[in-house]
Image (cartoon, rainbow, N blue to C red; front, side):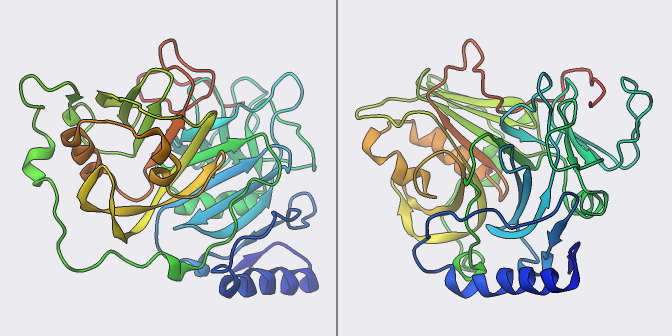
Length: 343
């Protein structure tokens, strides 16, 4: 446990985090004001959820970073994001590169310890001065002790969401809501078939060998009527999507948690639904429910391949933006671009 707070505020904050757990099963209340922290302060309680996929959510209006493990908030810190003229971009990112020691070659060799790169044009998470307002050249500065702790638990490919709307950080969830997968075997695509090309005449592409390992992001573009699957930013699959009903507007993002639900996935009745957490946009935590009215039609063989390739920590983005040309929202950057120095 680590809390960078005076003693009495430490006790109050820790009690708040601990007592919130039994209440999480109740219907979520209206989002409250962010936890009161002075510039440079943070709260770190990894024991609330010792295992599971990680996600970082950065709120620009609140100047806060929230850390979730398997849907449970385990940390929050004050941050300093991009100042006017150097605004931090919003969107869904993955960690592309990590360096414990790093120095900027753009800003007088400024130290940037615990650097975690989000874009190849220079945006990163790193330790730095946190004065209580946006002051960086586009990066997300974190308190140094918090940045070191975060660096120690993250991995390349992990999802980072940056939003520009206040009060949108997901509520704390009870770990009991996310039990481990059942021991009984479930129907699925044989592992040997996951890497096979689609059968002749299939209306989709599937080339997982293009990026054999890494984090998966699935992008459903209702504007293009396409579903695209990327691993480490490299496209490994694409399929057309038919729509028979009204579509949701805007952009919504979800991260995949550990565990399975008891009911079946509508597009694959032989597969149990997975557990998701909504991290951006409107609606509930289950993307299948949010998209039910649209009555989507996707080749079941493609959906099965995607389903069986997903692992906890994967990201699903549903957007009405078009992918051709590229949408303004940043979704993911791959390994093919030469790195620029983070700001």
